[in-house]
Picture 1 (tube, rainbow over the protein chains, first blue to last red):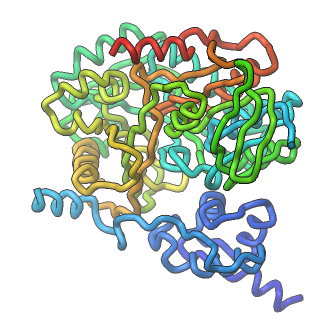
Picture 2 (tube, each protein chain N blue to C red; picture 1 turned 180 degrees about the horizontal axis):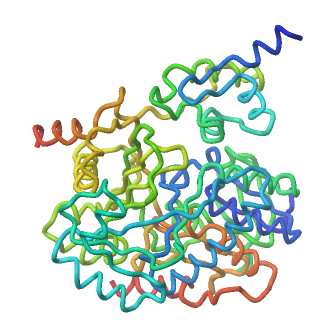
Length: 97
Length: 392
């Protein structure tokens, strides 16, 4: 029991502090895709944009729903790849124009 | 063949709200969504539910929607983070004054102008270059909601009340028999229904095509920037007053020689409950591609810094784009149509889908159950928008 409890409290999404237990509960409550889990719990919405936690959440979703991992769609990756300052965006673009 | 009373096509906030209000009235409802929930414009927005810059008849829908959101906050299974927020609508250029004065003289809301001295005092973050701002005299009628949670909460609560929510079910065709809705054909078979509601946002015209009717709704792309977290401000919505042009005056927008206005960029800088700033948005009619463009994002960013200079030192963590259902007169299309019995439209909400979802859901549920609509639907009828499109 103790070991299980410790495991459940593991942080999967470190940007938004979301635990394994919360992710499993969201799937039990009806989330069926990574995007729905993301929208519901905010995991993957922090500075890393899911680049660290999404593969692990995909694995949890795959296990809980008996769906092969290759059939799980990942949320869309968007610019920027790493956080940049608003001023950098303007500067870069002015150079380009 | 499976049989139901109502089918709702589209699992965005509009479809989910309609499903919720129908199910609440005891109507057997199936919601069909081709992707997962909130896959379109419903996931790409700022969650801003404003009223100050709205004009009649849209304003009436908006205010009614806010009252329903207050009820939903208590009724739904999960919290939707609906909260009252304070807004400033910033005037930064001399040319904006006539539009501002006209809006103030027409709006039934209690609004006032703040001049630079007062503005500096109440929100020191704002640029000293601003000429003024509009705000509410007393109680703010602006709100904000976590749109993603609202959609999931509407869907899950509907499900517990008996609705069937089917994602990854694409409607291929709506079948009409004798001038009346008969059934829909999906990738998983055919379902018979008395009523079919089209609430597929910008994708609604494709569904109307299957019954041979042209729907004058165009895909309008809106791009936005999400920043890292920052401590919560008192004014969580700072909006560019040019919104009055880019949101309500597509002709003036098209004829403008300013590239910013042409791209429909009149930023709203909204801070979410979690502290992120969502800086939006552009409004361009350019197909269904959801790519973000560096050029447009840079204009959005520089406009935001024009209002709040310190934003330049905040980091961007994401950018996004959503495709909204645009109509020529910026009004949604709601209700039955003369051509086909049992076919109901709920689309064309533009950038106001989140704001108007609860009242849309309620009105459509009233239409289907033959109740008197709580707001007259004449201004939002399909015949209205059809005529305007032909005249253009």
